Image (cartoon, rainbow, N blue to C red; front, side):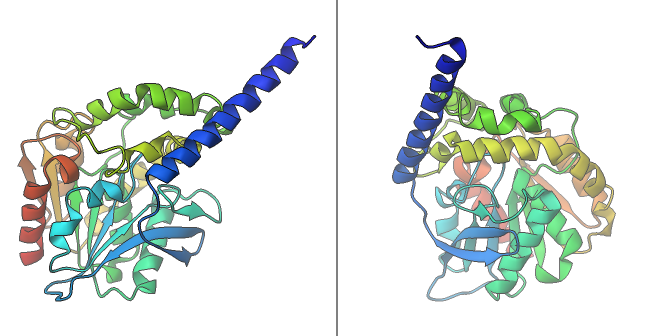
Length: 310
């Protein structure tokens, strides 16, 4: 007869096996798209889109929390890649970018993206950051300004907040519990709540029917995504408190795009306040929610082309 401890052990092993199975199935449905580059602390997965006739500067795109490069390739990158070299990169710990050292915070991730820019020999690209990718882009501008010509920030996370958006409150987990939860209940919960959370993230815009695969959304149900998500939520406020104090140091062109109906991040706080803190920065508001690169790709591309032209 099994004692309760033994039953609990079997349950934990079963959940861990199920989580690993789901992760494999998700990766079969959403496989890697690009190449890999080793940088200090990580092996970065990136996609290099190169037109036959490059007419403008290269563009590097950095995605947000619980995202990956397909957030850009779903609707936005192809149009830009007709005449620009476009580099899409999975941030360290997301998508298919794996860590070879400690989990990196915002500034450390910026250093890894900077190392990739140097390794690829990119000549002062425009750095495009969405959501948490905006925070990483701002950190790169502060610590490695010589590598990029400017920032184009789409619905950036740019200011410290006391609590994360409601949709991410499940990621507020003490460090000691992150591993056990990632391999037991995180995957079943993500599978049960994933559709509703996607609706919240996109609101008021509709979620594309193919976002789970073509947009990479399914990759968020893996244990690896839960682990990196809980880590980033945990370090976000203190890192942004330090970073936001330095925005006045930025001397490169910075443009910000926000959806007026963004349900995740406050456009006035993260958009207007940030633009006011950076010398010469501009901000433009359009109708839409948080996932502008997917839900409003045409308007976002038009804005990026105006930024490039300027």
